Length: 368
Image (cartoon, rainbow, N blue to C red; front, side, top):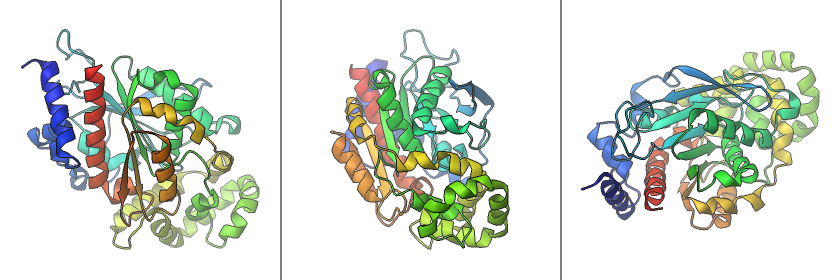
């Protein structure tokens, strides 16, 4: 059986067996290499690393990037891209992950553990977040994040197709990419995952509650954010002092269940509290003005998975249902009782859906 035929058969098997991760081509590969879907449980949260790279955005901002390479070529074509590909074989698929507001690339911990050694994957810190360079306020926009994603793809995936996955603000980043660079959809980008996100109509005050001092109410949030930005150093100090209260707010707003492990809550709160409030304030206006639902239909050119928790208090399930309705042919996974941090809280379901997405994307691309 030829390599291309094996790919087609594996992809068909994946489609026939439905949601079970073991029923997808990537799931079969995971079984073969004994990499469990919940591999991230065996290593400390946020501890996975690879050699850092720097991608320079079009305005000169340096973006911190880490690429998990694959040394061995498999039947999905998911090789390292470093000379290990056999002559005549198609370039490998690469996964590119874009994280959410006030988080870092570490928020993809369970996805990174699940795909490490199986598929080439790119993780990066959005501008002004994590280890990336600080942006000026003029470029702290969702539109600019779409351009940044294009730069990451161009500079880390010079050949071969890409499946992009975005969580929260990262999903908005993907939508921005589709708006400003639609020529990439169906050519370079062969699959899209939109996780706990929206393309507009967001109530931005919901986002800020775990990022503000506890004495500020939701009613005061919109009025206070501009003023707070000028005193960001003092606000950062208050946030550090009030960590216990912030932990409670993070638990209630980022997760859907009181049974979520405390280390998950602390892990998210550490990322939130490490984001300077000046950065919080810089990006804040982009959310209230976001209106890109008219630009998502181009994503129908490729397989799309829309994923959200039904208890998401930040980008509620209605946003994902609207995305699903506006992208013909997309799949919608609703995780019952799960909050905004669904990649952590229900990582097994998310990874299984991403397995389906990767299989569908590579299968369709192979048939073209």
